[in-house]
Amino acid sequence: MKSLDNVSDTTYLVFVKTSDKFMAGTDANVSMILFGENGDSGVLELSNSRTHFDKFEKSHTDEFEFPNLLSLGNLLKVRIWHDNFGKKFN
Ligand SMILES: [Ca+2]
Image (tube, rainbow, N blue to C red):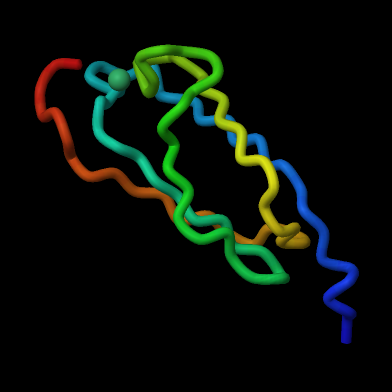
């Protein structure tokens, strides 16, 4: 069993590549949860892209930084979803 002293803060960088297909982009609010061997991250909102002001556009790669999260160990899966905001050409 690991001591809690071994659980350290870390920074996760998340890169999201949006497809180049027609209408691939979105203006919806996108959230995610990272699951690792030490637990999960809680809900992370992909709200501030470091690479694009208008995020999740066709062919873009957006970069999101989440500092000071507890280290999750090896990552097992990710759950990602959006709220369907902005159903239009965007
Ligand atoms: Ca967008």
